[in-house]
Length: 189
Image (cartoon, rainbow, N blue to C red; front, side):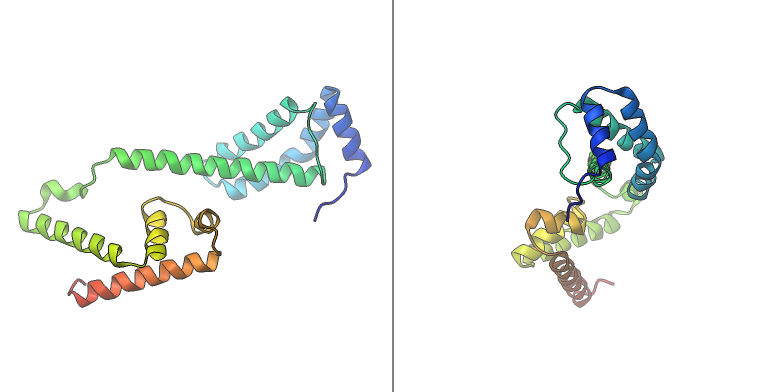
């Protein structure tokens, strides 16, 4: 549902398109506090990321002021822009965390201190889990690996795979139940 532009919003956008800095300052003053609170509800850490997201939206607003078209209300447009910018920042944070994780050794940190029999048991368990994951149905395995190895959220998986959020949850539940049952049956506690 889109709401029509109010006359004041239309006046601001017209003045903004003409390069009126006072109109921009008025929009900034009017919306900044609410947009920042909204951004902080999405980007809880680090707190300056929320400030950056809102600032980037206002910078983009000023940079594209001449060709800016707002179909609904100006507030809805700005809040949607902040939401998308925050989601971009979350993806950037996740990517940087995954890059750091990839640089870490792929063995257990304590592996250097373990006895050879403990290390062998760990390697066997890892191989057994990998074998069990390969036995999962194709779609369930795909959802499980994208979530666990790819770091995608359930919502991102649903959007990426074109399935409902409940389907993603069901696939994850079935995968975890299968793995737990199979590991318990093999004597792993």
